[in-house]
Length: 137
Image (cartoon, rainbow, N blue to C red; front, side):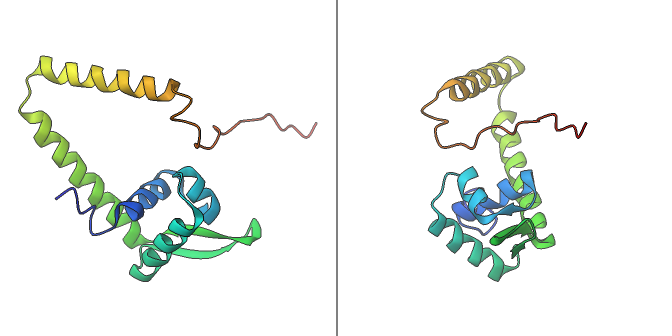
């Protein structure tokens, strides 16, 4: 059920969820954000364009690049994936008592903290967005 990723490949699933979280992205930035080579991203995006999940248009901010955007069908697919994953998580955690669920949550938070602090794990991630004060005066 979860393994089919709502009838997409795992690469397509990863790209769809990234686009759902960020909004439209240039093709090259999409690849950087998910740590995939340009050729993998290009093939996956082409397949998603053919299925009507995304559009690929010239980037108005940079005529040399393409902007990838979720379509309504792509948004529906991401929503379906999220519902599927939520249901699966509820089923998995449903058999645990309150104390066991708290232990799982604490363990996951510790793991996430360790991953965020691991420079080797974060080597290929884009830098966090900087909010600079760009006053004209």
